[in-house]
Length: 235
Image 1 (spheres, rainbow, N blue to C red):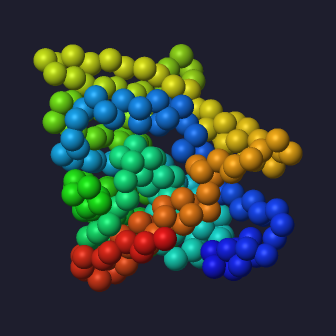
Image 2: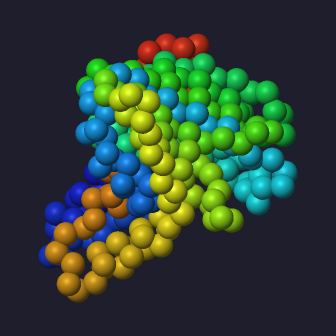
Image 3: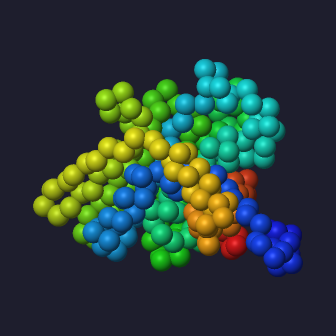
């Protein structure tokens, strides 16, 4: 990051360094973030990931993922943290985690449970199981006036997200958003490198990608230290 800044400072036209994080471009996250104001002050955040990383998955035998410190938790987890940070609109500051290695066909650790604190004082929990018989991916933010929930699902044969907002008096409304984050992030990148672009799309920033990694690295460090509280590196 420091090298990039040095190169950029001496360049007549700033080189573009973009990170392709499709979760920040998924319409479900974009639209649900706008509705966060409806639930009032945040009280709790829950992120539950039960993955399906087994021998039938094309990434299962990927050598670099198996040799990566943090394994599939780091490789898969950055996307879920990106979605979390986008929804809550603030940074994770402190974490405390427990990790374990149960499925020996996977690199360890393959399970993590972490408490975390946001810079606004709200607390939450991040639970990730790399390989589960009943896959589930869920973000849930509880506020004073309501709750928002985003869950991976299928509707009409299309894969995407079910976005639900729960209001006062037991009211709720749900909208299904098909996956299109990859397409949208590519559109943004093509626009950034076009001659007409004046400013880089902030959701493609390398700093955003690095912040996602920093949260998971802090969680994995805490797990290795038996749950010690670890601050997330500020970038």
